[in-house]
Structures are given as C-alpha cells and as structure tokens.
Length: 391
Image: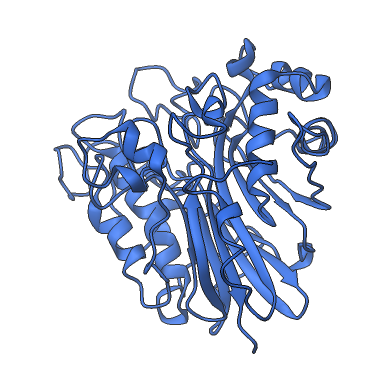
C-alpha cells in the first residue's frame, strides 16, 4: 500500500466526505521539449521518446500524475506538436494509460493543445543583437523553434471546444497603460528598447493565454491557462520583468466586465469572462510576492483580486526541506526556491477542500521522483481539490 506525504491528495479523502461533486485541478511544468532529449531546434527527439513509452524521466512524470490523479491537468513546457497523436496523444497512450511502477493508469478522454508564440520568428531585432529574424531572441516569445515551451490540457470531463477562447495574437500595446520597456531600469517611459514599429507588432503572451471551459455535469469551469515569461534574462530595460507583470495582469483584467473591455481574442471577440463564472487560473506564472525577481504588484494584484480565492496556500515538506533557511519554502513549487506555479479558483461556485504540492521529503515514499530535473522536472505538480457548489 502506498504511503502518503504532505502535498499528496491521498491524505485528503479519509476524514471528510463532502456531499456533491468533487474535482481536482492541477498544473505541472514538465519541462518536456526536444532539446531536453538531445534534439536540436525541433520537437523530433521528444516525439521519439513519447512514441517509445520507455523514457525514464517521462515515466516518472507520468507516475507523479498517476499518484495525484487530477481530474483536470494543465501542462506547461510541453512542446506543441500539431499532430495530436504524435504529441499529447502519445504521452497519454504510452505513459499515462500504462501503469508506472505499479500505480493505476489514468485515462484523460479529453485533450486540448493549440499554437503558442514561443519560437514564432519575426523579421524584427527584438533582442537588439544587431541581427533581425534570428531565433530564439527575435521570436514573439523566446524559443528555438515554433511550439517550444508549449501548453496542453488533459481532462476527464468534456472540454467545450466551441467555447474555447485563445489570446495568442493579442498585442501588448493594446493593453491600457502597458509597461512598455524603457531605456532605464524601472523606467516607465515609452522610449528606449522597442521601436514604434516593433512595439506595434509585439504580442503580449510569451506563449499564449487560454480560456478553456470544462463541463462537469451542469457546472462550467473556465480553466484560465498561461505561462508568463520569466522576469529575468534581460537588462536595465526590464523587458521580461514588465512583460511578466502584464501577462499576469491580463487575467486580473479579464475577470470583470469593467476592466476587460479592451481585450480581444483570436477570433476578434471582445471582452472578458462572463459575470458570475466559475474559474481556475492555472499555470507557471514565474512570480511570487515574497521570493524571486518579479514585479510584485503584478502577482499581488491577481492574488488580491476580489473574485480570486487565495485563502489557501498549497505546501509540501519537500519544499521546506529544499530551502530550510527561507520562511516560505514550504510553499515553493520550483527547485530554485519560489512559489511559481498556481491553481487559483474563483470564490463563485467552488469551495477549496484541500491543496498541495507534490514534493516528498527525503524520508518519504517517491522522493526519487523529485531528486532533480533529470528525475522529472525542476517544477512540482500543484493541485487543489474542489467542491462544486450547487447553483
């Protein structure tokens, strides 16, 4: 029998059996791209490993998912492979539907993935190295090839494909009071890094923003998925720090009609989330209010939003053990020491029953799954368990 650890949903079911529909939602940055498996500038090496079913790191990732067993799962940094059967479908068929070290297979009947901005090259010199149209720095989002660092959603419940909204092409300049990178550190002046011609074409999302409705019986839950750029790897202009802030701010504005009027999706439809909707904001947001180098006001504005339930913090003993000198280490979701990955539900329609970060401590079962990035990922799976309130 498997023992349970902190941040493990297997500890959540014995003491309290709620009445009504219960689902779990998770996010996991799995760091699965072609170069991770020796490939150069394509997803081919990843596709080969997905087809084989035998790669140990991918098997460990699958085992983590099988242990936690989320009903809805967002994957960050899973290369976008347009052939679903060769990409997300192969991961499901050859890894998740196969027992990993004795765990019960898991079958996600509904899969969703779409194009992202990473690796989508422009003819601009966005990184200012004197050469235009060069990957990875001159792409709409940093990437060595189209689709690197993509996203995917797996669900046990139907995805309402006709109601999905994507915001891959939304221009950064069209966000009111966007933090256009300036010439000096922390500067908010509108001159310096990007020319007017570049600024007029640069998209907000470094990957994409998705609103993916999931139907659970008569409940609709909007999965608001994204993966903002890390707020580092830049210079005094703070172009990544400002973009990270505004990518997070996008969801804050999207939640209410009065702040979302400027938003348009990839079909041209304007506006944000319908009032009174249930939602879960999920993804690697690359920002924390207490650790790291992000502009705190971005993530703080989202966590403090009146419609967002932030009255809980997923924790683990493994995180606390990883950085014992840091006071918030038990909330960390990445090995370098930050709460980077989030699952944030709405107050409306959803009640949080439990939450956690899958990060076993050294003396707990399955610690071997998280010893390093080479074992699984440098991020940890974060989950919440939700009771759907009766309408």
